[in-house]
Length: 255
Image (cartoon, rainbow, N blue to C red; front, side):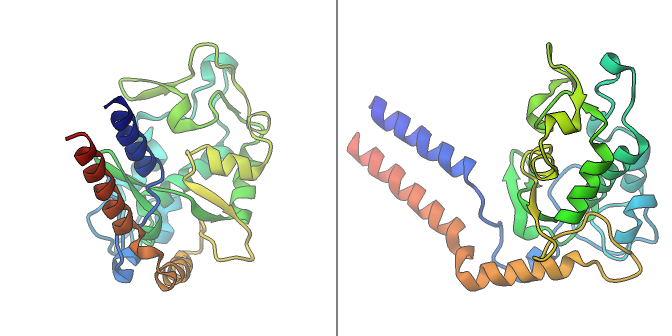
């Protein structure tokens, strides 16, 4: 019985940990996807205007004007970028903050994200989105002299009443000391939200010229077509079938 229990737990853990299958097989849905999260619109659409760095998304966006203002003027989700102030008496530089705000604009506003959307408890996130190396390199370059005390921000901070702070004995150090490269930074700071991708390959931009069509749409179309043509889109259902089969098998063995 103990073996069966631990076997079931192991299977469930693997399925949750490796739940990297897209949530839809429909190309149109995957190309027009707003995350199921606190501030996102139900469906993407046009906005009359968006604030500052979020402006390029105004023609087709998952964020509202109010959210775009909050990105620039508040601590979104009670998360502060100035978590090292107590130790070093310095806030994050404006240049570095600009890139984290740009990241937040992408997170809140980008509608072509369905292929990389994964479920988490009561909401959704994106996972291993192919971020253009040039965007990542510029982001790291802007932040490398700034300070942080956490390697993986969603996991390594102390959270109290929704606010992040450095854990006890977690010393603030520069980004360039915390991360050995731009790639390591981008792929880990937001818990594998990004996948460092050479500009020679289709990749997503966190900033672009809003006067032209969002270039991320073509990138998303490329990867969606690739995934659907390879037959990987059915993997979610295969995993469910296998899980059901294993659970029935274990149940019968113990009856």
